[in-house]
Image (cartoon, rainbow, N blue to C red; front, top):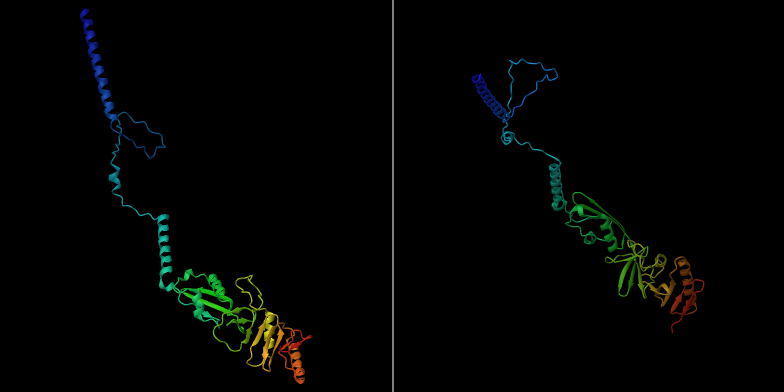
Length: 319
């Protein structure tokens, strides 16, 4: 009885040791399996219910090997990408080159402007004020050139400047025509029919010669429009001169004196004044001729005859 109990106790110890050894082996096997990544792939027909396999069938394991990504990328060739930034750069480069050529290429630089409609001013006069020779055509501003010309030349009534590629500038002008040569203080000027005075360009035949003993009244100190200069004399004075010019003795200039108006030195030995009104010039001339005939018949030789007011003419003897 005692021996059977001792054997049973030893067997229990042996069994316990074997069980502990088996458990250690199972844990070691599990740890070995966990260290290796195992992936399984689902079947394409995953929708169908899985069939139970018998214990005799073995499971398949697919092990994914992780290769370095750098080696895989080195196989692919780089593909160029043309985005909006690249297109913007190309457009900017093209535009910059076009602007550079436009401002620096000789084909787009202006020479002398072509002038038409001028009779008094020369093309050189016009170009000297415009100063466009050698400038790029894209910098020419017609409005500024028109203003510059009219401010420098009061004889211009209108100016039109046009620009066309590649380098052509044309100017068409309309000029005031002088009808009066006004001499005063040792110099002279030309006056157009609207009373505007401007610089004479040499000598011009057919003008009404006027010798001013005093300055005319100021018709306009400052013009309301800088493009339209103030007249030097009134238009009524211009019309009066035009009416008297046909009655003045040949080769004798018409005189002007403030307060007396226009007149001349009659070759018969006296001075006559007719005023500045233009509406009754013909009447004044007839009154003057009648007074001269009357004085000549009476043997009177006056020094001055004044018919500014034709209803009350008078004469003055020399002192």
